[in-house]
Length: 161
Image 1 (cartoon, rainbow, N blue to C red):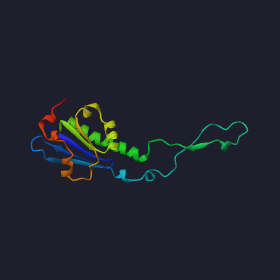
Image 2 (image 1 turned 135 degrees about the horizontal axis):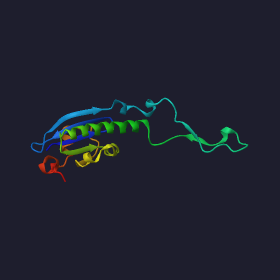
Image 3 (image 1 turned 135 degrees about the vertical axis):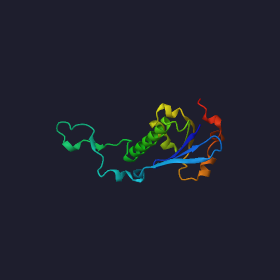
């Protein structure tokens, strides 16, 4: 009846277990992604590709049509964050399959929480008992405990719903 607490941002993650009796946080692992601190320009050395709005009409010069760079929301930094979220989920799935925990608490900032939840399979999301939408990655364990509801420390929180 252990609850796994995941404290994460786009660069690092810490995992704690908390037992319903005693309620002590016990660190059981951590992960980091050194690439997360890089700028987009550090991931690539070239500009985005170019696209033409339409082909040149008869009588127009070839270069006289409008063109712009390809954009998109998939920046290298976002891609790296999604890959890190997948690594965290893989670690949690391995622990879930080994029956290391029966409940899951996520303490993650809003942007990365969406990435993390998007990477989670349903059996893992079913174990989520509480989400704290706050980036507490660099806070002390006492500050983390202060943001957790009392129900995390009770056996009632560990019962399947």
